[in-house]
Structures are given as C-alpha cells and as structure tokens.
Length: 325
Ligand code: TXA
Ligand code: MG
Image 1: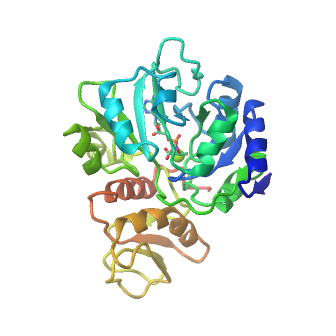
Image 2 (image 1 turned 90 degrees about the horizontal axis):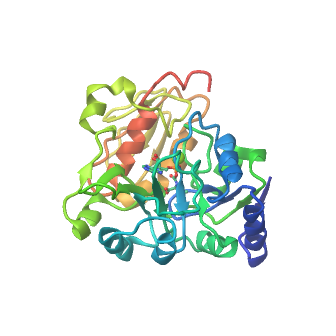
C-alpha cells in the first residue's frame, strides 16, 4: 500500500490501476472512497471483498456531471433540478438504470436502479476524468466501522487491501452524501447526509423520509433491528448532559459538562457544519484504550444535525457485532 500526494502523475497512475480493474482510495468532499471501475464486475467484487461487506449492499457510482450521469440512468426533470442545484456535491440520486447501462449489476446489487453522484472534490474529479469511466465507491473502511475522513484512517482500516491511497487532506463535509430516491412519485430520503433536507425541499418541495431510518417509525418500533454501523469498538451513549469519569466525551456547543476522562468538542460555537467535519475523526480519537464508553452530548435535529444524529444512532446501536472487535 502506498499513500501518495495527488499530482498529475499519481492521479494518472491511479486511473491506470482503475482501468486495470484494481482499487484506489481517493478523497471526496464527504469521506474517502474505495474506488473501482463501476462497469467491471471483478473490480466491484474486489471492493466488497476489501471492505468485508457481509452482503452485497449496492454502491454509488461517481461521475463528473449530469451529462455523464444520463449515460447510465433514466434522467428526470426532478433529477435535472436537483443536479443543477447540488452537483457537484454531496447529493446521491437513485434513478432507474437506463437501457444498456454499462454499470455492473453487482454494483447495484441486482437492483434495477442506480445510485449516482458527482463529487465536488477536485482530486475525485481529476480521477474520474482520467479513468474515463464511472467509479463505484463506498466509504474506504472495513464494513461497519467508522468512515474515513483522512488518508491515514484509510491506511489504518484497509492497509494492504488497497494498493494506492491518494491523500487529499481532511474531508471538508465529513459525513456521507445524502441519498435521495427519485423512482417514486415523491422523492424519498434514504440516508441523511451532506445536502440538508431543508435545502432539498427548497428545490423540490416536501420530500418523504424512509421508514428504515433510525429516526423513522419502523426503526423506533424495533430498535433492536437497527443496524450497527459507523461503530467504534467502545459503547456509545447518546444525549449525555452529564458525564462519568470513565467516559470520553464528544461535546457540542459552548457549555460542556466537566469530569470526563477526555473531551473533544465537535464545535465549541455550536456550528453543525464544523461538527459534521469533525465527527468521524473525533469518534476515532475517543475510541482508545482506557476509555470505557463514549458519551455524546445532544445535537439539534436540523440541517446537518439530521446526518450527524443518524450516524450517532447507528454508532450507538449494539447488535452484538461490537463484541470481539
Ligand atoms: O459520500 C458518500 O456517499 C460516500 C463517498 C465515497 O461518495 N460513499 C458512500 O458509499 O457513503 P456507501 O457505499 O458507504 O453508501 C452507499 C449508500 C448506502 O446507504 C446504499 O444502501 C445506498 O447508498 N444505495 C446505493 N445504491 C442504491 C440503490 N440502487 N438504491 C437505494 N439505495 C442505494
Ligand atoms: Mg459506508
């Protein structure tokens, strides 16, 4: 495994690896992605293998822009409006696969839909352009673990499973893209992320929210079913307004309870954008020997708070998979 500064040369080398069916980790504005040629079944299979994904979750295909997206999916007026406002950027659109779409069926887990987005990070764009094909990329971490927002997180998590990591510095958004399903009559939020619900609704009007989200009805009725994800090795306690001496505290805002073993503040000024950018890196830093549990202060459920709270609820869900990790 090699970590390289993004230069014309290293990007060209990364593109060669991709065209050759190999994997490359690269920065996006949200999190680092583990990229493979989205049109190559074997490259996509290698992504699942490197991540240790238990089942074939569908992957997002990354493209340069809306014109390119239309080669792979059936475009709609709503997609056009959203792409005009949010692309390039942290919004993923789920649309019907176009007839003859070359996207690997494995990348879409056999679904007749494709999740597609145009990232705004210049290194991601340079790589897509140089590879000359769509890049399938989940977050560049082992399945279930905390998403990587720095090149060193990728190296720690995937190590020799990836031959080349392009180091683009810390990710500015820090949480994954918003996933919006456009295949029904009303756009449906499948995953809150870097594009806020409020900003999306300003473009397309009221949207629906998937019941499967941890804040949704069906998830509330059966909290035990909640998939543990984004999970540190230590247990996570949410809504903390006081803190124990064996706890590491993930704080938010200017008023912080005292007495934790270690405290990191997502945003002392209470800025949700800053908090999102810091979330995964601070969760990793608190996930260390000597800390019994990670306590997290309440985060407002507005704007980027939706995505932050979604990730925190999944981090706190204990489905037993934490044992032994
Ligand atoms: O910000 C991001 O989206 C990052 C960067 C690398 O672009 N990628 C990412 O990928 O988070 P991943 O694989 O960790 O998450 C993809 C999400 C999953 O929730 C998956 O279920 C959903 O997108 N998804 C993918 N294809 C889908 C489809 N055809 N229909 C519905 N959901 C889909
Ligand atoms: Mg992920």
